[in-house]
Length: 240
Length: 230
Image (cartoon, rainbow over all chains, first blue to last red; front, top):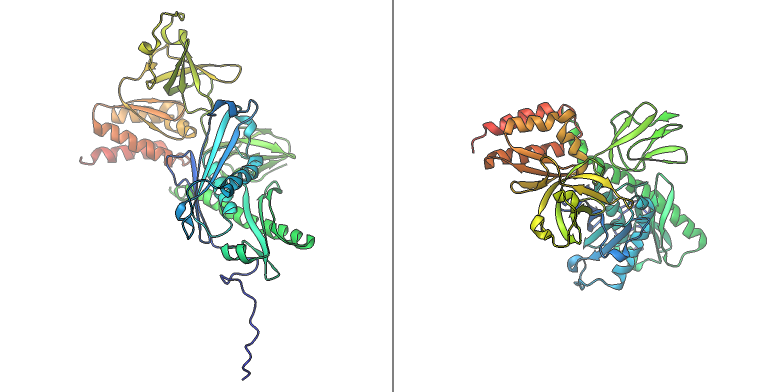
């Protein structure tokens, strides 16, 4: 027996395949007080989303005469990370709120509700990397649950690079220790990308591959969003 | 030229319903020659038209709708009423007291902020702001009863064909029910139990609005509730 260890296979920190998503659970209509709502578990991420509107815009001077205004809020709860974070909205929260708005706007028929507002609130209860993507996934389901007219669903997912290998759906460790992170939001039926960010270093070829990989992930998430929306009505459908 | 779903299938925004020449009905849009859904609902292929019966939708005011609203503001010559629509509704003085506005009129004596009214949408102005009126039978300030809310898209189911569902509930429970098209329902019964039955029934209708044979099932449900001891 050789004392040298046999060369082991490269493995991700949680034992996933390089192109495998984390386990995802989505539920729609979880908040009776909101017009629409959704809850998502994406790996260890736990996020809740609520939607209000379309309703009259307050303050009125922010209203647009030809379309509705979409307002998004991304917020991490103080207990979502260890150590505790301040509950005040940070610079990062504000940026992700904006990014979410840009990702969701193309999917909504905003021009049908002039002078009104649609508010999307997402609250991260537990964070484990890729929260902006998970928030977009939950917000889309909540928007549909609120009965807001949409062109398509928006699915979001990240791809990235760690140890020189390309991977799908980065977790917290891979996000922090990896070389690159590419969050992407995608409308599957329209075949359009609504969000593309990149953090880290990637070659042009790797970037292109990451985009393809993330789109494949988004298509899988899209199916889960569909299932979640249908589940709310599916059970009663079997009744005689 | 083909349908992609069966009649009354559950569809989700973005689903391609039809490819080819056809008119687009409610809750659909056309993109690159394809007709797609904009809301979650049941697809319906009619003669030369495809539409989606929405399961979730906000209230879109139309002329002639009966609505239940809350007065949120008083301005010079009109009240501002919240009716759960994308825009607040306006109730002008002549539509409330059948007399022109006079500067010495004390508007809070007629309707104050916080009052609930049963009103009719009589017009949509140039900015599509709903104009209300409380002149007419069974319209005006609400003095008694309580209000529950359901999704406005399920109101037609609660009313039923030519009012079959609501008349049946009325007859079985003896409660006074006013259904606003905006999803607010005013209930006033003689006893607490009667009112509770109506709340339970409305809840059941909201949950099962997309199933068939509902009126008969609801009738049996009311009977089972009535037999229950307090």
